[in-house]
Length: 462
Image (spheres, rainbow, N blue to C red):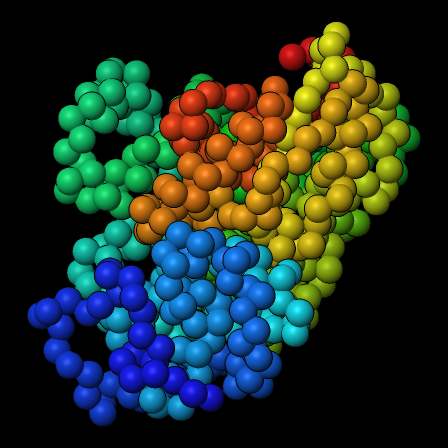
């Protein structure tokens, strides 16, 4: 495989150049990967470098550099594996710019499994590369907080005071936080409004089906979803029970492990996955339902995440085999509840494809089928609908500049449809789109498709 001289192929993006105080790479840096599940050379060699992935890759669309594309990153993996390039600051940043949206896996005519390659690459980075102190501190904050709902809940009071007291408006107007840390400023700008429901556990552990019971299903509450989007979880329960499902909600469940898993925090992701599996042990559910796209993709990967654990390997596979996105599930089993119009006049909706639902789980048609069953709903399709919005888990906090450009593009494309409302199946996407909606010139309401279905079943009009 041919490479160019500097890193492997050179990047023409200015931020890709190593800082002047970085020492030159030495032979000691060219050590390849460790032996624990490195990127598979066979998967690397499957890439024929045709370039079909380039236009679908959001980081390449923004940065315009070969090394910030799937093809370029695969070149770089190969060079590191062969000991021709170091795992250095200059190389790691190209993997950090990857959103993990998996659009390239959908577009690739050769079937290159880039999802498996980047999933193997990130733990290698976290084990074998020493990040800067500010980066380590930021990541420690994120991964010590966001995957733990009860820790997040402790911050709700101070966050509510911060929002209601006017301090948030003052901080944003001064702009000093962005000067101190663009990443912290991005985190603050994404804060959803704290409501009274955020402090409550309003969903019982067992909710009976309405009418004849068809299924017994477990439900995962999520982290951000349960605290900042509790209405989505409540709507999910109502829709499931209205369609003949008894719903089990284990109180011991925590995070799904998506955030640490997507960022190479391997041991943390495994520990959290084990807890989730244990929480559903003995519930005897037919299916396990999730209403957040990014969580669903990770839950279905538990067999891979725990592949080396002899005690949990088979449990993980069995758990993952039961996981269904709520929209996927409802289309498969069919709706039995009667649906009513959401308003007197026809309602034009634009559905936003979340990457880990579209590219990760290959679910595109079911959400649209559900929405179109609601009387009076007219769906419109946006330009570049398959392009990532820039949320990508915690990407919009770690890479705020790239994420901001993608968020603005997404908001503009959704608004350009002329739709009256946006339907979004992922909390991170909803926060990202809402943040950039004013920049696009308008502020449309954003609702989860399951909320709209719940309104329709209950006869509640918008």
